[in-house]
Length: 462
Image 1 (spheres, rainbow, N blue to C red):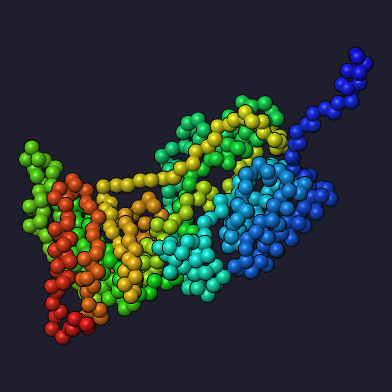
Image 2 (image 1 turned 135 degrees about the vertical axis):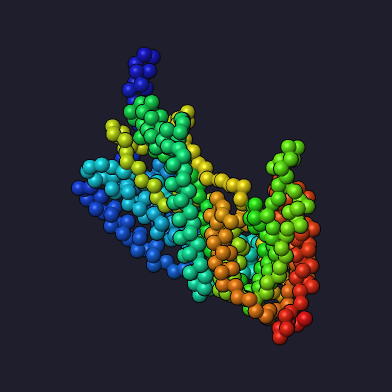
């Protein structure tokens, strides 16, 4: 019996050791072959025609990542979803996906080693990717309609440049307020290294790498979109602009002709000075000092259409963790190796968030676009005159650019009073407007309705 038991023990296979994934040394044939496969994949992705399903590209990418010199990439959980569109895949590859894949070859070179975290795949807003009842569906380009997409390319370039400048400004502002690496436990790469060093040596790199992957500030970006030029209909802006000095306004712009109708009631906040009401708004005096006026003329149609396009997209922005690849030097003493993690493996993650701010000088305007032929109107809110949201901030810039093109003159379209009845202004801070602004705004619409053209000026269709 003892001999039988001993025989079983000797014949039993030991438990297989967990496979360890490490970089390929550069001076090896397998490294050179891996580099050639990377170059081939790059050429294949670029050669795939627009509109083709992204699955062949994803399959080719995953095949490459499963090969020997790229196996370490399993440290990133699904960098590209299987059902990603080819448009999003190509965008991801060009924005840093290729850089991330190539980094696994770079880790095999001698000297200082740097890991790369891949960019986040962006959302796609095209006719092929939305449900038929999506509010923007009638104005979206099909995925393969390159001519349609190119119509608004200059606007996309300007918007993305504005978004990038906004991110840089916010990053500098945040850096001036707090050192991310010393803000507290779980913040920044330095904290990731500190936490990882508490692990045993074999788990330090995985713990550090996992912590890095969840670190960062989410940013808002345009989706990959082909939204047609909104060339007809009316854009209406309503609300209060300004704080101590302000104007309650109704503005109506015709996208087809550039016709502009502007109705304003401007004043300055009058404040009580007696002890019981000091600092509170004297509504009666404030209203008595109002100056009302109506201005009629034209604005640039191109600027007006670009503004409307941006406003329509403002509710479709994409929250992206990493718009570009993130590079981080591997801490000294960390062996670059990845193995299957035990179920009870834990690490302190980074912080994902964004920058949100405001000030007392901000107000909110309500915008409404009335498409031609009585289409369903679309509307939203716009923080004015600047905003922490990059979409609103860019739209504010476009509003200012549009209004600089205003030229007084005879209108080429009658004021759309029937449409204005379907719009409402946003509320104003109760401190600034204790009695609200509805009556003032109603009066602004009435002023447009009752406007009389000066001598020699006629209103077509009226």
